[in-house]
Length: 55
Image 1 (cartoon, one colour):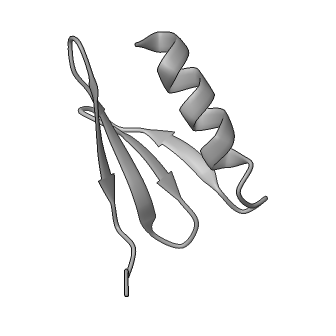
Image 2: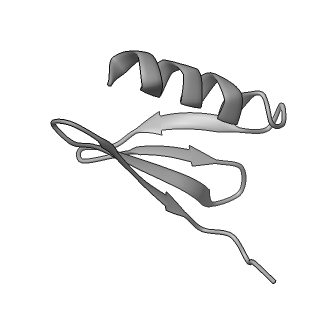
C-alpha cells in the first residue's frame, strides 16, 4: 500500500504548484483552497474521497 500511496500522492501533487498535502489524524488531505482529495489508509486498501463537481 505504501508504494501505491507514494505514486498516487506524487501524481496528485504534480497537478498544480498550489496543491499541498496535510496529514490529519485519520486521513491525508490534498488541498488547494479546500480539500479536493482525501485518502484514508486501510489495512489492505486506500479509500479515496473526491470533492469535485462532475458533469
